[in-house]
Image 1 (cartoon, helix red, strand yellow):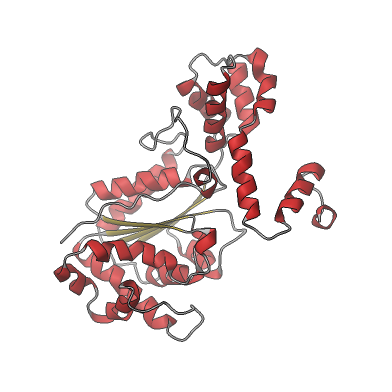
Image 2 (tube, rainbow, N blue to C red):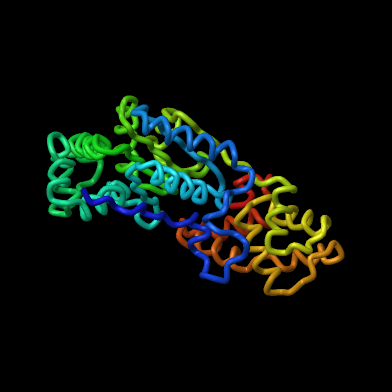
Length: 329
């Protein structure tokens, strides 16, 4: 059997929109700060799946709180435990393509599998998904009648893979995944109780995403909403790169970023470039230094939304978060 490599997903779409730059102290190999509970829950879920007790874990949080970082740690640990790890990521620009995320998950595995392993994985009911996963037919719209055989077939593809080795299906940014793939994931989750299978998804708070994602969240074994970092953890993050930062300056960094790890790292990168002394006397300068890369990334996301999204966002920025929607519009 050919063992595929862990498919490393992309970071939050906000981070993905940024240009590559010199990295600060942050590394994907570092253990994320104040995420001990989440890491422990993921390790327990991996152990359970390896013992043929299916699990579903949902990590929820705003952009920049470290969902992708946690998912990467989970996939690496699962791989170290001998699991097959298949990873995909939802995307706003691909959401209209049915089963796109499902293809991301399974297509690379089948491409790298030996002919014998491929025949085994696609045997029985899994054959319903074979033509689609091999690219011989174009997947039809999820509202059409062929959907159930595909859902059933994709479930058995996962079950057949897990029959040989425990399987982890990891979906980043599930709120931006196509609805058909999320229905397939839900279909499998509802039948995974006695399978050596772990499903882990990351998503934003319930403002977007389809009904299947909402149902998957209620079906999860573990559902955790990530919180911003405390002032103490933010100070630790700042001092990893700027060890001379004093308490007043570190507190100002927390006030500027509200404990968002991604925003904090971007601010630190800007501070390195500016060579501003990290002392309390310079705290007021942080407001003027605000990371321009974040502004560009946010503007890019707004441009991909409905035509009125950018003007509405500007109005809310002026009027404040508590302004009535009708007034902002």
